View (tube, rainbow, N blue to C red):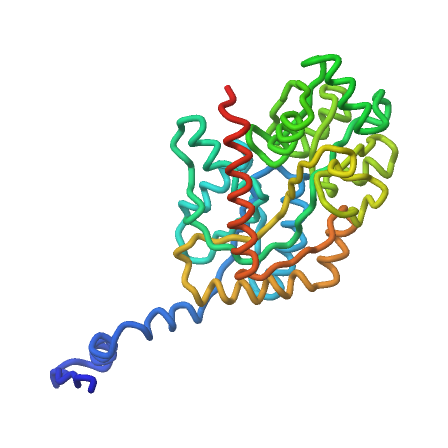
Length: 336
């Protein structure tokens, strides 16, 4: 039988003091609930750890607009590129856990802590510092070259690189990022050499490809589909296991004898210690954003269909993905 508290309030205290005393003797649980009920009451920052123009930015902007409409406050996209995404991701890990700093990350969030271990560096964050809220897209990366390149198929590409080790180069969004890891996986499997040129994000890497500074990239379809349709770039293959909605005629690497797979997914995260009530409110807003026709059409026009997962399923998916990416980074090993 529960024990009754007998702590009468002194008669001389005023009403405000009495309310505080009652909250103290009955437990403080009502205070956080009252405080959380006001959230959000000011603008929210959605951190994108890459420059404008890449996959994460393409997803973040329509999602931020939809979240803002739902939450009735401004959701401002803040691009914080650097260190393959680790700079922006680490910023959110260290931000106040009040629900006013969110993260729109790619699958690089799973890769970078393991890369830091391989390089004997202190990680800028750990995975347990975050809670997944929603996955929005999950696109296999696509192997892309310029349309004036000598390669019309992935077989020609691999054969030429085997004959000419280290003659060609490729661009990425940074060491161990989501444009780097899939290419290293293909290099290891297919047995060719190619020089890696890291940039600060997908947009500058693709600009380098278009400008002739590099010979290939692996990136999400939304970053390059417009250039493929305009005839400036050619897609040779993708890292998925089924046809791509936006590039249905492009074969998978597995179909062409190179069984490597990689998905460049995008998801919404908060710091792990953000109150549960705020996380739940964000889940609801994210679900409505994912089903918003304007969001779906904007992201699809950019080259990525919505592939939504709510927090529980996303958490399961993320755990499996992180395990696979850890193994991939360990196989790539130390890069200087």
